[in-house]
Length: 583
Image (cartoon, rainbow, N blue to C red; front, side, top):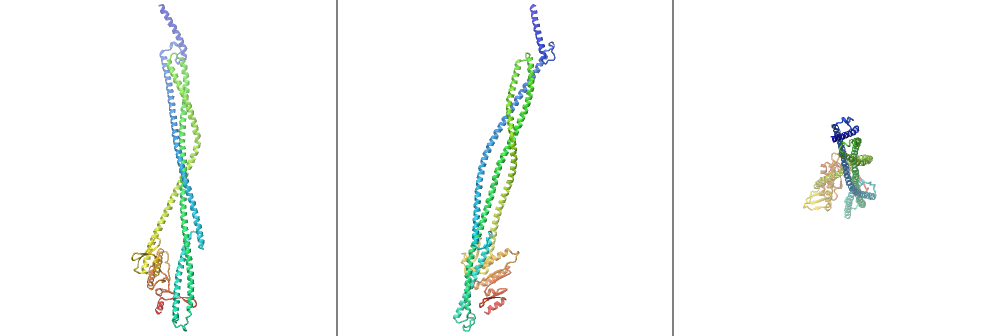
């Protein structure tokens, strides 16, 4: 029994010590009472459960912070990968820029060659113009550049007149010689050369001397006419050279214009290439700006989340202080291992936050650098807009020049085709008219037809198919051929102006030269046929009685050999025929 009493006393002593300790600890706990006797074990266990639940919340918050930090790291890794992609694209753009630089250099070399071609063409034009001036000076005529064709036509007309004048004078000389020879024969026979009476007592014996003087004058005139004809032939050749020079200058200037067009197109293409490079670069800058903006947004989100974490960490630190104090007070009543585990979790969370802070500072620094570059990029974007507008204007200009160049080439081709077609039609019409007129004035079984080439070269075909040049015909045949060609040309020209103006007169000067009597009647048929074609006025100068007798109106020009004076008298063709019959 004494032992039990001692044991009971010990237990009471322990209880009192525990009650005293409990009384000391109760103020530091969250229990609703400070009376040790009023404390229930259920209340203590409930409070412990609450604290453990709160500690679990803190542990969850630390885990959430760790996850957020992991997400930030992943986002930073994505940004690094994006930066690597941009670096690869930049390398590709640099390679493309080098390639474009080579193409631009080749284009510049082409432009240099074309400019040299332009210089050569300009030099060629100057040489041709200088030659034109020299040849024009040799013509002794004021021929301006561009008037060579009209000058050549005028000289050719003068040359044709000179040729006809030589032919007429030559015929006059031959006639005069025949007259003198006949007169000399009559004189040798003792007859007067004019009246046919005996020389003795004849009043016109001395007229043969006048005929000889007239012959000398005609021969002198013939020499002058031949000299003028040769001079005009030489001048016509020089005029033709002027026409060739004008054609060469026109061709050179046309080539120069084509080269100049191509040079302008190449220059615009080069400008477009430069603008395209700059646009690509600025578009790349725009992409980088978007990347910068995305990075700024990411940094801003991280900053906000970091601030939120800082606020939450501050709250947690405060609560941790409270918990630490409460932990110290309840250290004996709680599981030390659980508290130690919570402490380790907290320390890991703090270490992770300390690791995140430098990364946030780095991102903030990158954001500041990107913002600093935005100002320059915005200026380049404005330049990009201006260059894009300029490129569009240049593209429209190049398209217009290409269209204009194509239209010019099409116009040149159309003009060439039209000129070829008109020449073909004129040649066909002229060939048909020439054969028609030639058949009219020269009905003969020797010749089948006349062929006219596109270059206006004439070929006469015999019945057996043999081809002859016009120079191979006889004198009379060439005369008829010449008349036929002139009448055919007249008809072709007259048909071209029909209805627009009265038809011009047709003038034939000594058409019977080199013609025998058999062909004169065919010439009369030609004149009548031309009247039937609609020629209202035909003037014929001739000494042939048959041709003169076929005229509707007759004007006779006679010359007194003694006074060398000419008289003009209008006669009726019937009277002239009567005189011819009387003779």
